Image (tube, rainbow, N blue to C red; front, top):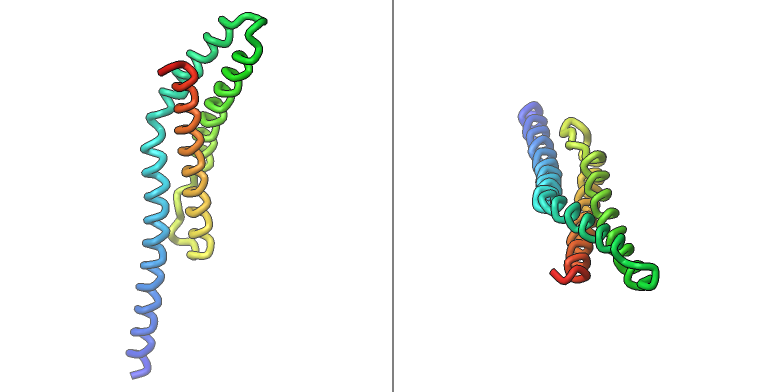
Length: 134
C-alpha cells in the first residue's frame, strides 16, 4: 500500500513537472513565432536604411533640421536591426532537463526581448516610411 501511494505521489509530481515545462515550451514557441513574424521585415529595414542614407547624402548644409530628422530615423532603423541580430545571437533553446526555476525566467526574458525587438522594428519602419512619403 505504501509503495502504491509513493508511486501515485511520484507520478503526480512528474505530471505536474511536465505541465510546468509545457508552459515553458509554450512561452518559447511564442517567442520564436514573434521572431519568425518579424524576421522578414529585416529586408524592409535594410532597404529603408539605404533610402535614408541616400536622402541624407543629398541634403545640403542648409537643411540641418531635415538632415537631423533623417539621421534620427536612420539610427532607429539601425538600432532595430541590431536588436534583432542580438536577439538571434543570444537566443538559447530551453534545456528541458534543467529545473523549471531556471527555465521559466530564461524563456520569459527571451519573450520580452523579442517583443521589444518587434515593437522597435515596426515603429522604426513606420517612421521611415512616413518620412520618405511611402
